Length: 259
Image 1 (cartoon, one colour):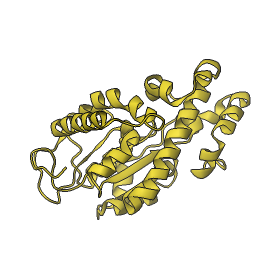
Image 2 (cartoon, one colour; image 1 turned 45 degrees about the horizontal axis):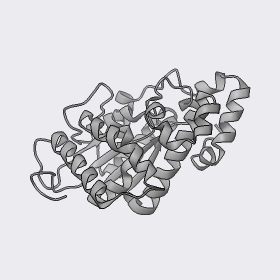
Image 3 (tube, one colour; image 1 turned 90 degrees about the vertical axis):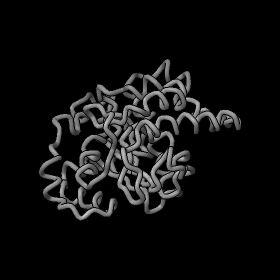
Image 4 (cartoon, rainbow, N blue to C red; image 1 turned 90 degrees about the horizontal axis):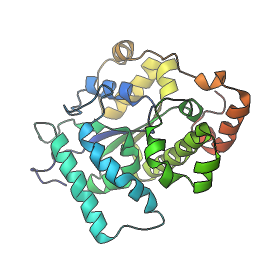
């Protein structure tokens, strides 16, 4: 992936999550650290050039755990990714340039990124799955729930429980791979920590990026806790108890059971 016509010589920074986790604020922090995240972005700083690639390949990637890719499929997926990346690339591909992209659904492609860019950095943004279950942003559930959930789960479970099951499975999958394969190039950031300890959490991100930008200044400029934080606590206990039970392992792993 070092062809100067298809990618810059330096490895990228990738920001991903299950949808609605708060990736926009992390993208803004990386922009202040000097990263070029591309120019074809939406209001949430998502890199739009990857939308078609994600739509085409995510469900197949999930299914690959039981039905491995053929050599032809693997080649086609890489070719599609290269084409999307070529459209996204910063104007200059100089060695050492800080570049990357923010696209929440990148969380599904960590093995691909690691294979193509051994030194890729990944920021994994997390938000309490119980909050996520009541988010208006259920795009990943609508688009990929059929690949992630069983038919019984899709038919018989209420929408918030389906949502947290997706959150549980995909975040655990990403964390396992990131910790095992990315090593120091993997960083998990909880949105709640950004809201409650902004300067300290921004400092963690900046250190990960190797930036000397003032953390307090960035935190003051970019972080404003939303009214939806901990919205799950306002919901009926009958449903929140189901959510906690459904995702107990991940909630515990990511430190949310004491929230």
